[in-house]
Amino acid sequence: MKTLLIRFSEKASRFETEHNRVKDIAEFLGVSQNRAVAYAINMAWQHLADNEDMLEELEFRRRGYKVGKVACLNTDEEYRERIEKRIAKGVPLPLEDDSELESGLLFRFLSPEQQDSIRAAASPEEKRRLKAKLLAELAPDDAANNFLANR
Image (cartoon, rainbow, N blue to C red):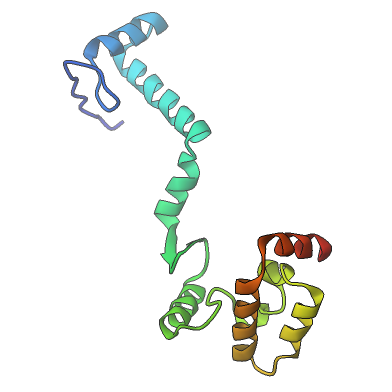
């Protein structure tokens, strides 16, 4: 078992506590002060997990990374390197691989006519530029209607 030194404050605040609080918890629960501290930590952990998105935030801090303005989690290193190279070169829609340009969420926001024009483009670079242009010009209400129609 590992030990932890706990220092108490003269007054209670968000990140400090008084020794009497631990004594009160221990007395109320009928346990030692060590168990009262463990109980308090477990209760704080549960509260943060339920109300503060702690688990998701910790998962991202431990395993996530940002590429440009997008937060990525659980992607392989090769994919991350491809994205970073595209961003460095100024490639439109850098988070999408060439094979995904005619599918995926963003594609479903476009109308059938817009989708057909992207499919008809000759090269992946042209598809990227056209898709980025069409998405930039797309009104939010139109995107929502297209998405619902493309289900």
